[in-house]
Image 1: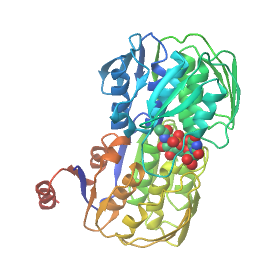
Image 2 (image 1 turned 90 degrees about the horizontal axis):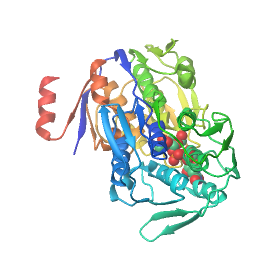
Image 3 (image 1 turned 60 degrees about the vertical axis):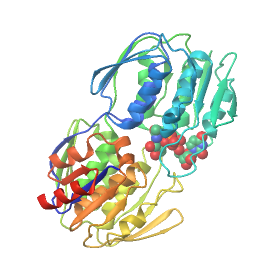
Length: 430
Ligand code: UD1
C-alpha cells in the first residue's frame, strides 16, 4: 500500500505551478463525447480520477489519444454502447456526468452508480429530477446502475432544491442537446460549472448565465469539435496557500485565477498571513503567530468544503479558539481524530468543529480517510515534530498531481513509499 512518509519542520518556500481543475476536467471530458468530431483538451490534470474517466470513455468505444501528459484528443464517432457498467467506474463519483452526456447525445444511458470520497450520503436525486424534467425516464437497475432514457429530450424549467455542482453540470450536459429552452434556477456558481459551460459553448452549445444562479440553455441538434484548455484548480491552489501558512513558509502559487481564490486569501490575511495577488499568481507569506477565525463552508463564492480539512489543520496551530462549520456534507470531520493523534485540540459536535489552537504538533501514523482530508494530514505532518506516515494515499492521488514532488520542490522532506524498508531508508536520510 502506498504511503507518504515525511519529516516535519521545514517551511515551504518557492513557486508551485497549479494543475488544471480536476472537477472541471471531469465535466469537460464527459462533454467531449457529445460530438463525433475530435475534441482536444489541454491543461488536464494527471490524476487518477481523470485516468479512470478516460478509460471508461475509451471502453465505450471512443478514441482517446494522449498528445502529452496534460493534453488529449477524444474522438467519439465510434461509441458502441451507452452502457457504462465497468466495476472501476464506481470508484469515481463523476461517473454520473456520463449519464448527462450520453442522454443528451443518444437519449439513453446506463451508468453504474457513483462512488467517490466517503464524506456523506451524497444522493443524486437532483440530477435525476433534472433529467426527468427534460423527459427522461430514470430507473435504478438491479446491481446499482441508473438507466435514463427518453424518446426525446425537451427543454424545461428546473428548480434545484439545493445548490448542487454535480446536478447543475449534469443537467447542463443533457439540456445542451434537448429541444428548446431550459432554465436552471438555483444553479451552482462554482468556477468549474462556468468552465464546463464555456467548453460546451465552444462546441456550439448555447448556454447563458453560467456563474449566476439562473442558467439558460437553448438546446442544439449537434455539437462540434473544439480545442479547450481547462481552468486552474482552485482547490489545489488553496491547499498550497494553506500549506505555506501552516509551515510559516513563503509560497507563490502560479498559473491560478486569483479571483477564484479570494475567499482563501481573505481568510489567510485575517489570521495574520501576508497575501499578495498578481495577475496569475498569489503569494502567501506565513507569520510566526497565526490567530483564530471562524469558517463556514458554503457554495461558491463561499468558503469551499473541499478546503475545509486543510483550513482546520491551519487553525489547529493558530492561537485562540476557532469554529469551523461544515454546511455541505454531513460526514466531513472524520480526519479530526487523526489530527488529534498529533496533539491538536479539536472537538467535533454535529456539523461544527471547535478548535483550540496548540503551539506544536507531533508526528504520528495516520490514515487518510478521503482526498482533501488526506492533504490536510500531510500539511500537519510537514508542520509536526518528527516523522509522520500517512497511510493509504490512494485518495490523495485521485486529485493531486505529483503532490509529494511539488512539496519536495518547495523544501519538504516527504516521499511516497510502499514498504517498511523504504521508510527505514527515509529515516536514515532525514
Ligand atoms: C462536487 C465536487 C466535490 C465538492 C462538491 C461541493 C466534483 C466531481 N465533486 O461534488 O469535490 O466537494 O461539489 O463543492 O465536482 N445533494 C443532494 N442531491 C443531489 C446532489 C447533491 O442532496 O442530487 C447534496 C449533497 O449531498 C451535498 C450538497 O447537495 O450535501 C452539495 O453537493 P454537490 O454540489 O452536488 O456535490 P458534488 O457535485 O457531488
